Image (tube, rainbow, N blue to C red; front, side):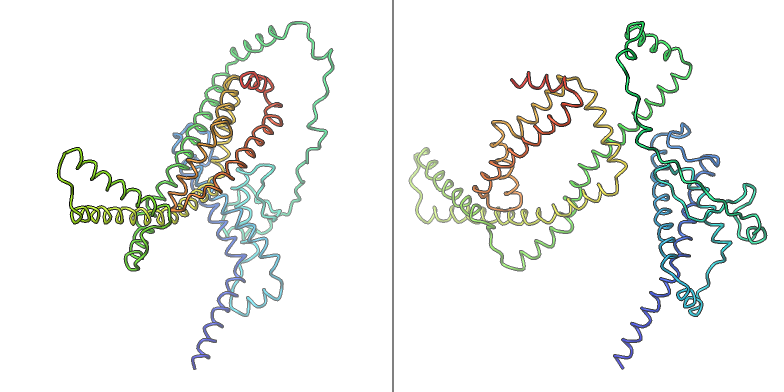
Length: 448
């Protein structure tokens, strides 16, 4: 009886999964259609039926960031669901459709599918570019006066016409090549300074120059706000994740485990040696204070009592330190996961941040660039950098409760800064020398 009931459950589960597989095209198209409806709802409610323009002056930057994030989510849903719709229709053959009819799954009419695809294309076409077009492969055009309604579509099937679309013209390599200027062409009648002055005056007298300046300023302002906010998120989110995970998730579990099981106080021999040195220092301190006060020497029983109290105190202190090190290991795993998740879901912010740093770096003077390069190279690969790496590695070892392996530290110091120095020199030779040769010359003069 048990085997038959178990077999019945497996059969029911497989049947439900198969029914869901047969309904994949309709479900994917319906979800893409709902996302397109939400985009149209935002357009009608907040932008008077127009495109959701991120540079619009109707709302503040925070409100536009909110609309932009919703738009990106909805566009992503449409892309994924249309891809799923096309793939599922390609895999489903006539036998699957007959099986769906036998299972009682009703497929929507072709006119309704064409209506949804047309509506999705009309909404999404405003936000597509030549390099990232979202098409439903339907090649169907709906007349402008035809409303999006299945009843109207069914009554006006003759209005749906198949119109072929031409592929976009692919730019060739020759089209991007600029004509090679000769020496005669680069030399004008007037000096270049006078021509540049005339050009600057034309720009200043242009009535549209003020709008362009304001628009560029707004774009720079939004880029700065997004970049600073993303940098703060990269710092605050892992730290908050570390503290929350350590306090509410990892901490109680470690304390319960270490209290139920009589774990050792010291995680490694270095902790034990440190506690022993502290206890010996305390004993010498007692004797020294006794000599200074000219008091009679402490008896062996009094000395033993004082040493026992100090040993208990040190044991409690190092037990807490050992538990804290174990908590740090698991809390750091949560922090790294939060950091990676933040990078994955913030690809657009990463692009804005890269543009922000490019503008800052390229806007620096040659001496400032050389100063920053020398500062970083001296800190990480300079003459005094091994001491900094040694302190850093010992701090990381203590943070995780690991013994500081001197051989590993010395090997790391002997190899990693050398590799980092090679990367710096290659970057200077390969990229900086091409982008800003004057900065490289300034760097060499300052370094000498």
